Length: 202
Image (cartoon, rainbow, N blue to C red; front, side, top):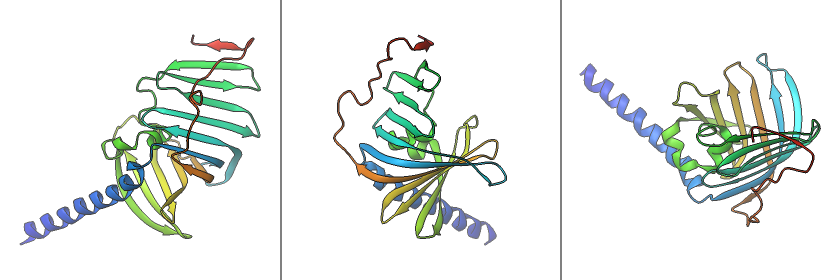
């Protein structure tokens, strides 16, 4: 009887996990691209606000994204499917790397390659906080840079993302001016280094 009860509990837990996953995949299944402005807040391990910044994020399935910080510093990340570019305008320095699997478990790629959501993450619905419905995603890969990634929804729209790294630091992104499946120009994810700027890695 005890074994049967344990089996039923395990079955219920597995069914719940699949339900949580399906709720997320329903949202992402029809999401080919995503664009939004954001306010980013980084909290230290003791939960004190550490840094604030503002910017723009654009992602396109399956492996392209643009992350542009505009305040208080100017920093640009562009993944074009083959290479990852980072441009620090203040330092006048560009770093380029082969994209490959470098970003496969990163939160940015989560939005642009959601078809692998259940493959890369364990998903748990954590409940409603201040009107936002939260899901917690735990990477299945042991060497991930993040302990958890959380997604918040309001009225069935993605409104925020939180990433907790292995040092206890939390990065919170709150989205606004959200556009699902925007028409993106062909050059959106094409990065051309400005003349006179050092390029490291090329």
